[in-house]
Length: 340
Image 1 (cartoon, rainbow, N blue to C red):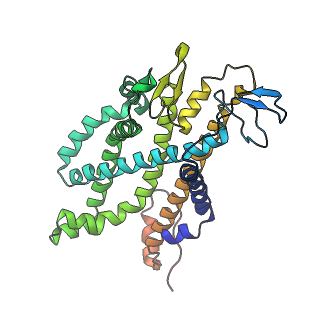
Image 2: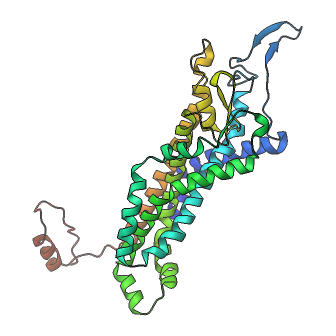
Image 3: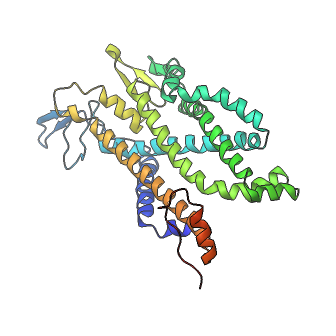
């Protein structure tokens, strides 16, 4: 699998996209202390008033500015590390906790797995976005900026909630995958020879699960991003929502999904700002596209790896005739590579 990925240019293109965003975003934090240029009014060299925010895109401001005068290009660069970092953290935390919970349960009797599935199936019906909305709504809306808790406490709370909400599905998935591996013949041999569960996991199960973990990781990455977008459309921005005058709300962190929901609420303006929400919308679409593309390349590499692991043994004439006689459909293809 690793050799296939190393020779895959599309895989490296996806890594280049994510790496470039993170490098630019962290560089803005290191060299500019995370600042975003803010221009309320635009004047000419002789002091003549030209325009006020929101400013249209220009050579100096590639994406223009929003109502507050924030440079949209710098907003997207600063928010990249938040969006990618949040999704990576939640996806990693979900997988780690699901492995710690699911693997020991997979070695238990089937009765426990059946009872656990009946218990957790109810959580799989309700959408995560709706449950997260009910949990985060009371604690993430602020009227007074002085009463907003620290950034760490807000980020930690929301990451914890979103991580726990995604655990039931992952726990059931890892239990099912592990039990399928335990039913294989090589695992029966390992148990017959006296292998302990810990040894069975390290030697046999983990090597089989590891390739699929990268695919599951990218799937959880995209799912988390979708949840953040859904919450932003309900006015729950990541890290908290600052309620302004006349019911308007603003995010406290330059995070892409939050900016999309924030600018979407301003869609009724009567200037070029009508299309302001397209800036975070396009960046989010690119992020989802490259994440799904990276997932497809990982699945392709995993599929090729499994094909290489299956040996192709040529059949004798007697074996080929016996295989053809056992076909349920007489038109099914048969391997005709017969040894002389």
